[in-house]
Length: 405
Image (cartoon, rainbow, N blue to C red; front, top):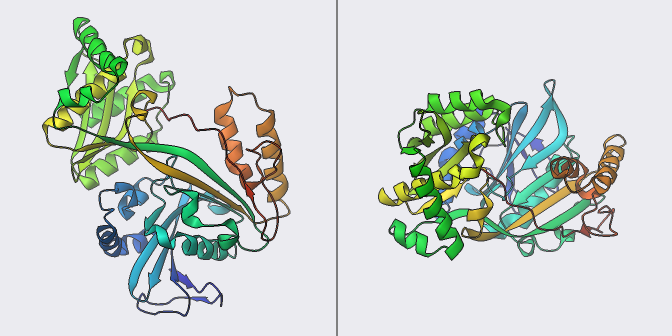
């Protein structure tokens, strides 16, 4: 654990109770043990700000969701002895060595910043100053805030750093439920309501039945059996992460639809907390795709959640296009900061040019390369996205397509 003062640049271990002359005192948490030690203060902060229902801001969720070959990089910001904000980040490791790329937040801006939005400009500036002195040359942050929250780029961009601010159209992953299932259906469009009812009747007529008590071991075994035939393959570490999350937070639940032969054709898993069901994942056998079994299963899920008193369904790892329009919208801000480096900068330029040359159907590779290119990318026609000093490039891309679960 190390601390840093933004202007003086002093580094060294300091206790939580030591205040500095800077707006906020920065504490760098490297190890999982240090992050877990901060958990009581984070829970107090989330309760104070009314964000306690957001499971992605829980330190244990961050640690249990950390992919292999990534290390935890967490910054805690104090005002005296009071925790004001926590900035979650992860750093890619290759062969045990940390690369210069650091990411924070998910595709919808969740799990990045726990704190009052008013401190975001200060947090971003101090964090950027700190990381760029620690052999980090690329910062990729996603916040569930609007661009107005961080103010002008000149206020948070260190000198000599390239910056790209992407203000994505509002998105959402929180689906509010209703007092009863018929009331929920009435909130949908006529076509959407018809799909929920029609495809359920069709599945029941074909011999498919809803199983509300699927063992997680069977869920994981079925995913391994289907393997690459799934439209969105699930890796082994994702299954292990889901199992750990369900065990730690409790309220774990797996459900699915069984075919006439008893095999799982679609299933999902997640856990409930504070009347919110956090959906971790769902798979559907592509051989049965024309039956819309995934939609049927989510209808059963929503009906069951309402019956047990849950008020919200949260799609932690993306959602289907059908439900996207009914989720509570919130802003999404992507912030890319790059410190020029002799080897990394040419690589980012090359990735930016490859993205421009890729056809639209290669969206997955374009997203990966664009994340590498960062502020050197070109998401606005005619702009390069890179400049030095206090100048910046503000790019507004086309809306992102909703993720699929």
